[in-house]
Image 1 (cartoon, rainbow, N blue to C red):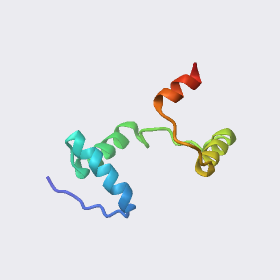
Image 2 (cartoon, rainbow, N blue to C red):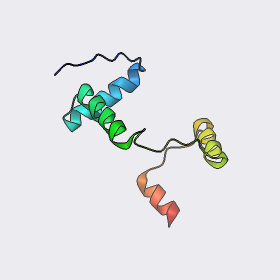
Image 3 (cartoon, one colour):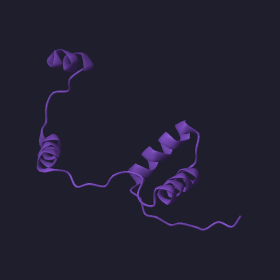
Length: 82
């Protein structure tokens, strides 16, 4: 089977993070890209919804990026939800 070459520019940190995940899954980057392309072909589009966030989500994302707080443990989070 013939193959085609794809060149893409990706942030180095993103590439390293994703390759670490793929290694733990036991697949190569090439296999993951081929799987993604197969899903695009099967669904005749991007295989997940592409939506713009609503105003509430945008506000929450901005707040999360700018707020500095004390780290909390999972136990503290559970207690705050009780």
